[in-house]
Image 1 (cartoon, rainbow, N blue to C red):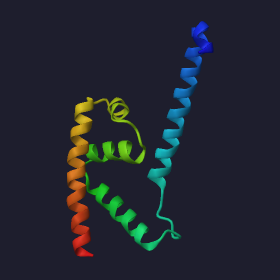
Image 2 (tube, one colour):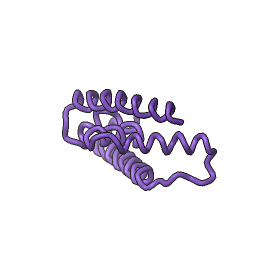
Image 3 (cartoon, rainbow, N blue to C red):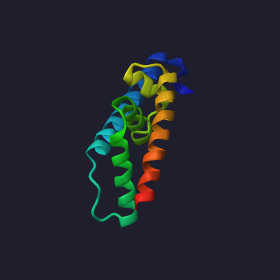
Length: 113
């Protein structure tokens, strides 16, 4: 490692990489939240996409926040916990409950289709 002799350079590199990663994730999250279903998407895929978004909207605010940050913005559980200011265990619990709720909601969508 060439930067081992220069701790300042290493810290700058880490800081720049963190800033770039956070910006990429923020841009991705904003794009996901604004995203409208594309009219050119395959009908089956677009329908599934819409069903998922509808089901996510039925979640409570706490569960919806962890689902969006973890699954749609692709943030690790630890980062979701940091962003929301809650313990990692709480994030995991909310994700588990949200998955159970989404499974029921999406299964009922399939039955009604």
